Length: 163
Image 1 (tube, one colour):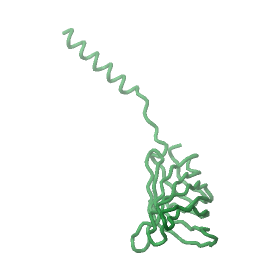
Image 2 (cartoon, rainbow, N blue to C red):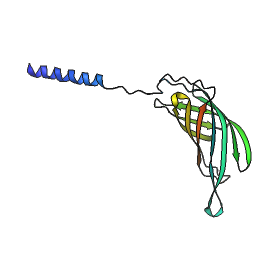
Image 3 (cartoon, rainbow, N blue to C red):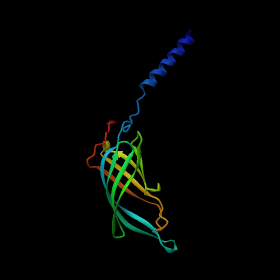
Image 4 (cartoon, rainbow, N blue to C red):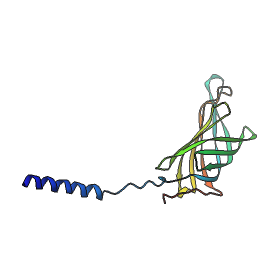
């Protein structure tokens, strides 16, 4: 009888401990990234020259990125590189984890990856800190490179229910 009582007390103690453990709060558990964000970025693009020497050319970029809340993203971008300005429209898909970490992949019409973004949503969904990676460009002898973007809400309507 004492052994049974002891087992019941141990089980109750463990049950109380398990229930009283703090629950982890995931700030982006029910998050819907939905809205327009503007960004500006500068960086250096490496170029492999004859003989294997690497030269770094300055580049800058501006744009507006729109997240639809359902995993689709569109970006209107302008890029200055080697004294020339060009603009383009990108479309892709994105996802965000419960921990507010996300990624977006942009592809061309043939399904080739143009750029891959890794980001974290901060400031209750008002800002997105982003690293944009570009794959190697064999034709222009440009190796992989990245730029850091900070996307700030414009007509930001992100549904940040985790706050």
